[in-house]
Figure 1 (cartoon, one colour):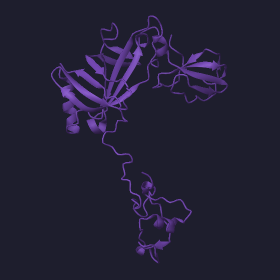
Figure 2 (cartoon, rainbow, N blue to C red; figure 1 turned 30 degrees about the vertical axis):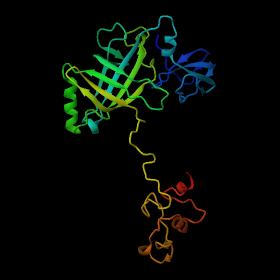
Figure 3 (cartoon, rainbow, N blue to C red; figure 1 turned 180 degrees about the horizontal axis):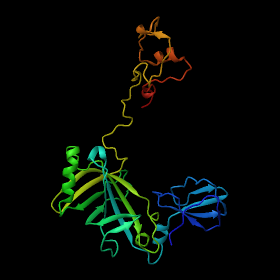
Figure 4 (cartoon, one colour; figure 1 turned 45 degrees about the vertical axis):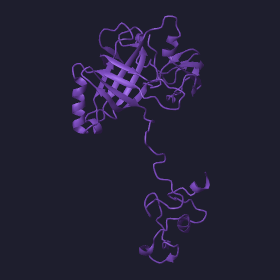
Length: 297
């Protein structure tokens, strides 16, 4: 049977298993490891197997039924599902396309999981494995194009953003077990492996047979500089009297740090000393650069 959801102000015994009242992307269930009464408000559930959380006088430990099922001699088949989520700004709509390859089990039609229908479609995805090379994986997702459906989708998307080719669309990889699909005796939309979220980085190829996309993690920031601002040691980059600068005082100085009488004559010298004149030698200085940059090699 499906795992019941957590309830407040309830007595639980050691070994009781519950799930969060809302869907958890981690795919975790929680086993009571210290008996007691739950609190009236639901706790913040942990995201890792083995992590614990105190709930009133109960203690819950994170478990994953999907992983436990795999430890059996004859586990249920792993089902791999994909969701392609468009972005209105980039693609002109927020439509969601759901597919499954139908190759993980004896499934001859569409799959329903969590109330959502996943169309059986020739889909090939690989490259999700993490390695010790220090680089993030860049998986490939190939979707059939025999009926030119993907080509048609690309044409519509490119009318919103020229040459976009679904770039920036979110791809979710959802894995569960056949026994947890809707219609099964143990159906449970919360029983799944942790969801993987990727983004379309580029269209790798397009033919009459299939369209292949290269995916990237949100953390895969090719060509980005951290921090994005240029590191300058001694020249403040903030606009004087802006929100970043935050100075609103009536002590006025010229660019050389000499006291002046009017705000019209007030000009910041963009140096640390200029900040100290306005905020004090011991004050917190909102200096907009990196004074210590030249002190290290």
